[in-house]
Image (cartoon, helix red, strand yellow):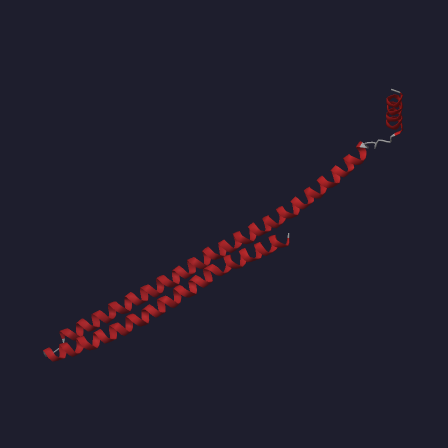
Length: 157
């Protein structure tokens, strides 16, 4: 029993002499405030970059719509020009057929007309394809550049 009493005395003595860390509320508040301020600052920076990215993307989309409109107009003009050329060729061919004096002349006129018509159609298709290809490149370019810029800026953040 005597041993137990000594052990109990030592435990009491150790507890009484132990130094417990003190909690300083002002330091904790300062640290919390610093972390919160840093978080707010980082959030402001991220928001600013997102806002800038959104504005860049919006401008690119506006430019894209304008480019698409222009390309659409150019395509419409090319199509109208092709239709006009085809109509003029058809009328010229009909006039030539009406003036033909023999069946052999009709066959010759028809053969020449068909050959020219195929050549004209191939040429018109090339022209229209070139306009479409150019339009696709011009329409996609601003959006592609804007998204690349935005993603690059976001990666840096």
